[in-house]
Image (tube, rainbow, N blue to C red; front, side):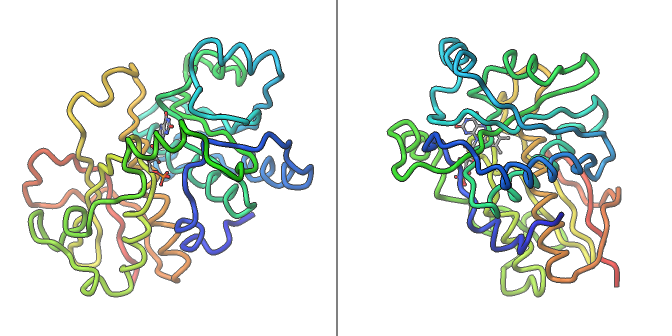
Length: 282
Ligand SMILES: Cc1cc2nc3c(=O)[nH]c(=O)nc-3n(C[C@H](O)[C@H](O)[C@H](O)COP(=O)(O)O)c2cc1C
């Protein structure tokens, strides 16, 4: 099962925090479930597993009383999942979960990444999380309500969710500090644009990309103190996984062949942390 026209789907996706409460159509639910089950690996090879979690009335009430997802209204179905603990587990989870989110988007469903405003304990119990796994984030999934709730609108406003950093702050040519203009990105214009418009925790957009010859090097710029609250969960590394997912899907849609490689560039990247490179196959 494939995500149809990823570039358009990436453009359409938006966080949805208000659902109309209708249960999913059986066929749609089956398709989503089938997609989740075959989505088992990210680019760094850590095993992934995803499942649909249907909350009962009682559980919805219980989770609400724990003061967790007041931000999401009208949803009782969630996509939850786990990644085996290992190097770059957060990136693999971000990559895999974003594929689920985009697939759900093609089915006309609303989703919202939830890594902060979430009662982890309740959901980790539901999916039987082991001590060898992480559950970095989940997403509600369902039919969007006609009108956004007040909390939804407040959240979008606070996170400036409709805005993104401009190209010159995110993408560079040959070295940091030398912006790569969209006009000079050639066939990679829509690929990089697909990364730029992606979702990130608190809309921080911590990814930077440097083009060097036929390679694109990905770097993480952490927001100081941002991930301190969540123990071993690193949401900005999850953001990086989302960026890798968007880059790969968009490149593949445009017929650009390439693969992920460790190719640490020679220049000094300062506080930017090198993650991985995309090497274009000629
Ligand atoms: C890893 C991750 C974690 C997130 N956690 C939350 C969350 O806990 N609660 C929430 O309401 N939104 C959360 N978001 C959604 C972001 O705030 C949202 O993606 C961003 O503001 C951009 O808006 P958009 O998704 O509508 O384009 C999260 C997003 C990501 C990628």
